Amino acid sequence: MTTYLLRHAETEMSRQYLVNGDPARTVLLSELGVRSCRQVSRELPISRVQTWVTSQFPRAQQTASHLKGQASGMVVVDRRLNELDYGDFEGHTFLDYAAWLRAHGGGDRPPGSIESQREAMSRMVAGLAGALLRPAPRVLVAHGLLVSMVLWAGGRVRSERMPAFFPESPYVRPFALSDPDLFAVVKTLRCTLELDRLRDRRSADRAKRVSGAAQNLATFDRPAPPSA
Image (cartoon, rainbow, N blue to C red; front, side, top):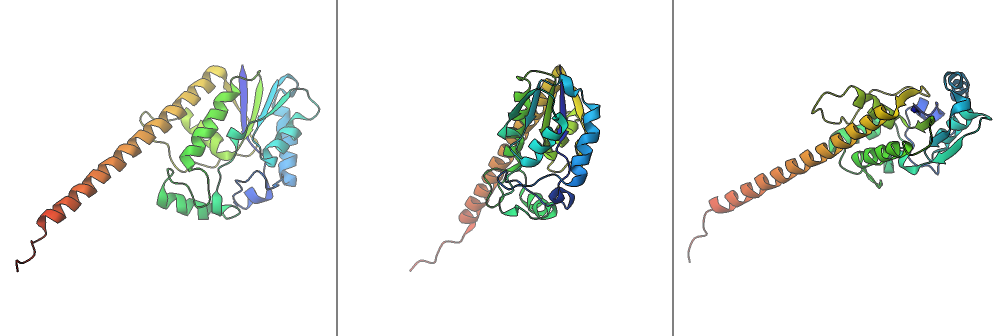
């Protein structure tokens, strides 16, 4: 059984590298995005696809609709595949968000956001795993981060940490994964995220102990006040 994973087609916002992490904001495909869907549909076994899985975002659902055309197949909307919640960076350039992410790390939540990058990654991986429960062949239309994570996992070096930044994934280019391969990718991503979480927790605990020891030492070295 096969899953065809792909990023949605181009939008005017994505072409300008403006971020949209709010599914209630209607961001539709550009003319080029619509044309690219028609071209890519020839590369997929459209008539045999049993399940079309998308995020809640209009651009993902529109991509799936253009690819599917009049073909049969169940359409499933899975919020776990949603784009990152960018919080106060909504509508800003990706470079604005990237500067904040570089300074604060993937474990912190951006101002106004309900999730950190790492929390969003774990959510997306859960959505990817959920696709395995759907009838196959499947087409899964997601967002760039998840596609980039899957491609990274395929070439991951042992003990390598999950990066905060990835090469940009191409628009509406299908990547075919057999069920065993998809299961292995999900396992790799889950294990990597959990291992990174434990490492970060140990580092934070160590830093806290060092800070506490330094404060105690400073208190011990402080001269006693003169007697009356």
